[in-house]
Amino acid sequence: MAPLKKWPLFSSWTFLPVLSWGLFISANIVGLITNTINWNYIGLLCGFIWVGGGALCFWAVQKEEDLAGTGVRSMGVSILTSFLIGIFLFKESTHLYLSIPAIIAILFGLSLLAPKGMKFLRNWRSLGAGAIFGSYLIPYQLSKMDYMDFVYPFSAGIFITSHLLIFFLFKKKAIQITPIKGAVFASIGAGVLWMIGTHGCFWALNGLGYAIGYPLTQLNLLVNLLWGVVIFKEYPTTNERLRIGFAAAIILTGALFLTLARA
Image 1: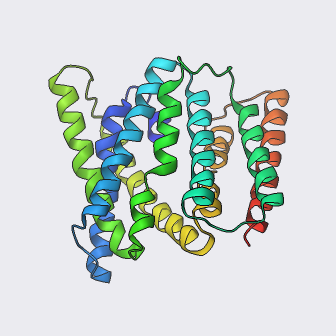
Image 2: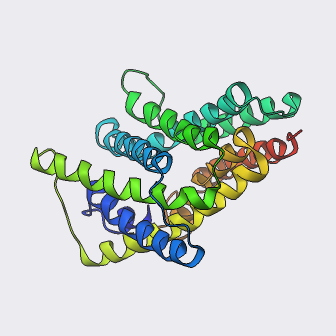
């Protein structure tokens, strides 16, 4: 998401399809090397669902006028949703005396990072995005397919759906397209990084399961905060940085206990 911060006039609706170019190009390279290019409908479906969550998230940024809070709410709901799905739908075995306090600690730490209170009617977009991000991989998990066979159609689904969405919204004059040369190249690079992270996500799911592996992959907010503090010089005061450090310590403690909770 760094290009959106670096170039404030570069709209999130432009960022989404350009990002998809980066991930689709890298998916093709990996697919050619590993001979895993295919058009499996499960991957395409999950890509379609993911774009729905991304659209809600970008909409939330515009309407809820609370960028940090939008990210925190979305991530908190996705972590809780994926944990509950892993426990109740996929019947994954965890030590609940560790995993439940771990999830509570992670959610509490995230709540400390939200600058405003949560109101359901006002924040339904970010909450809905979190629910989608926490559940969009259900078809993949149920299919039992190898993740290398899944990644290419998943990327293709995001690529196709994001362009269709942007084209529809642009034709309806609901959004503006703001191409900025530097931001475009940076966003393509972000798509490549996103693809690398996606492979890491699936390695975590394979090794740790949905209830534990997926919530841990959603802690990218801590990396986002590090970018903000170190690169963009956000949260300049000592009190702000102490609050972030305290929240991060609670979140990381929860993540540690969640890792130990695997049965």
